[in-house]
Each structure stands twice: as structure tokens, then as C-alpha cells.
Image 1 (cartoon, one colour):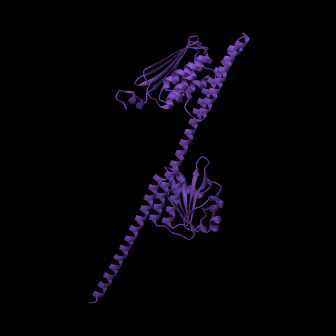
Image 2 (spheres, helix red, strand yellow):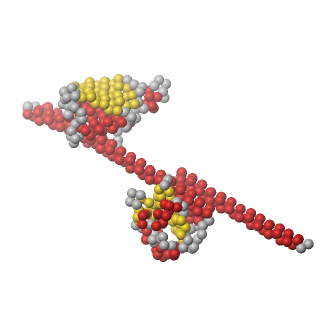
Image 3 (tube, rainbow, N blue to C red):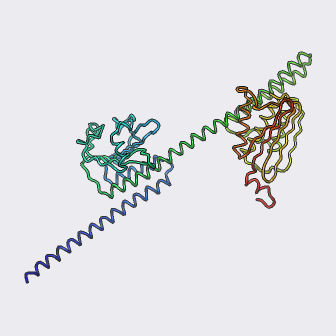
Length: 426
């Protein structure tokens, strides 16, 4: 009979334990769902965000909500300068200017001077500063205490093996964090690190594109001005000759041609700066534009021109048409400027596989390497070669002293252009 109360007590304790265990399970499941939702939202917002800082601000808010923190700061590392600087500050749910939120951390700090930086590189997991007042690793301890910060959680951002920054989660009370909270903070930090890396790669790509565009514009301006000035100089020399032989009508005609060349060269230079296509291509199809450019250049230099187009090039990318036109202009200018040519042959040959441009003159020719450093010819040949290579093609030059020069550009025909020009192509 005495065993009955004991059994009843055991049953009661067992029931209480089971009920408590069930409550813990329900609470853990609820926390897990909430944290999973926060992580899922972060991943989704990474795909939706139009600017990296918009996503990073969302991550700061998610960390503040899940960890019930008052402050969350994002620090990013500039590897080139080895400096750690505040990037974003969230306080009481609001993004604040760095100068207002952290006046003591406005200026970047060398990462190598921060004890926590070296420790994060080693442990590669969040570091909990349980009590700011007694932690010797903090360089700005007095400033933190003045702001009312009592405990901190430092969550690292890694890309591969490189530490690129951290989240500083700050609280006005002494805090302890559960393991699931630490895991969630680390997961959100990895998403933030990915966003930072994507932004940096995007900036590197933008800088590379800017550099490429700057080089392209330099080539465009060189081609335009060099060819224009060559034509103008020849017309002025012809004007002098006409005046010396008392032929004023011819002199006026040459001056008129020089004036027109100056105007067209200025217009083309402006168009190059604004990254527009050559004006000739806007007025007529590519083959006719090429014929007109060759005729204008040869006529201004009193060259005998033999132009022919074999095959149908069909529609070509605008960039390829512009580059082939510029190659022709540069080659003719070189024939006039350096070769003293009297006759010029220009052939455009197109088939299903490639487009080839061949330009031959009967000038003085040269021995490789072409041109002398600094005379402009080397830059022109380099520009022509780059124009061919950017379309997967190649430039070849054949020349010898006294035997003229032949320049050939062969470019693989773009697949879309081949399909369009083939029978039945759309």
C-alpha cells in the first residue's frame, strides 16, 4: 500500500517531465521555423536586391530581430589598404549615418592592429564578448561603454579563407546566446559575404569595361584625327603648289577640300567620344560605306583605287562593321602617310565561314617591325590588330622595301549572320 503514493508521485513527475519536454520541443520547432524563415527571406532578397547595400541592410535587420539586438554594425575590410571600416549601422531598427552612430570609428583602422581580427582568422566562428567592461581585446572599450554597450557578438564574414569583415552585434545588457542563434548569425553572415563579393566582382568588371572603353575611344580618336590631318595636310600642300604655279582656281578647290576634311574629322572625333558608330555606316549599308570611305581617302590623296566586294557579307554586328571600316581607314592612311603609294586595291570577300578585308598598295613598303616608336604607325597597327582580335579574327601584314604592302583581316563570320544569309535562314 505504501508503494501506491510513490507510484503516483512517479507518474506525476513523469507526466510533468513529458509535458515540459513537449513544450521545449514545440518552442524549439517554433524557433527553428522562425530562423529558417529569416534565412530563406535573406536568400530570396539577395536575388531581388537591385543594390548590394539594400540586401546588407536587410541582413542587419534580420540579425537584430533574431538576436533581439539594439545595434548591428557591418565592418568591411579593404585588403589593398589593410583597413577595417564601418559600412552600415543599424540602431533600434533604423539605418543611421556612420558619423552619427559611431563617431569614434569614422576613420578606418588597420586590421592588423585589432586583436579580435587575428583571433577571428584563427577560430573562424562568432566571438562572444560577454562583458565589455572586463575584456582586454577591445581597443575602443571606453567609447563602447560611453555608448551604453555592455556585451557584443562578433560574427565573421569569410570568402574562402579570406576574412572580409564582420558583423558587430551590440547590446545594452549582459547577454548569452544559444547555439541556434549563433548558427543563424553565421549563416546570415555567409549570405552577406556573398553579396559583398558579388558587388566587388561587379565593380572590378565595371572598371575593366571602363578601361576597355577608354582604349577603344583612344583608338577611335587616333584613327579619326590621324587620317583627317593626313588628308588636310595633303590638300594644303597641293594648295601651296597651285599658288606657286599661279593657279588660283585649283588652290581654292584644294582649300575647299581641306575645309570639308577638317569639318568631317571634327564631327567624327566628337562621335567617337560619344561612342557612336562611324557616320558613314549610319547613312548607307556596310559595303557602300566601305566603298565610300576608300574612295574619299584615295581621292583626297590622288590614289588610283580598285575596289571590289565578292560574296554577300549580309548583316554583321555593328561593332564588327565599325572595326572593319576603321581598319580600312587606317590602312589607307598608312599607305598615304608612310608608303607614298600611287595605286590602292581594296577587296572585301565574304563566304559562309568568314569575312576577309584585303588592302594592297604599291608604295615603298617596309621591313618589320613597322614604323618607328613614337611616329604613330606602331599604335595604328596595334589598334588594327586589336580590332581584328576582339572579333576572334587575325591581322596579317606582308611587306618589303620597294614592293608595297598588303594587309589582310580575316574574321570568323558570326553564327547569327551565317544563319540569316543561308537559304531558308530567318
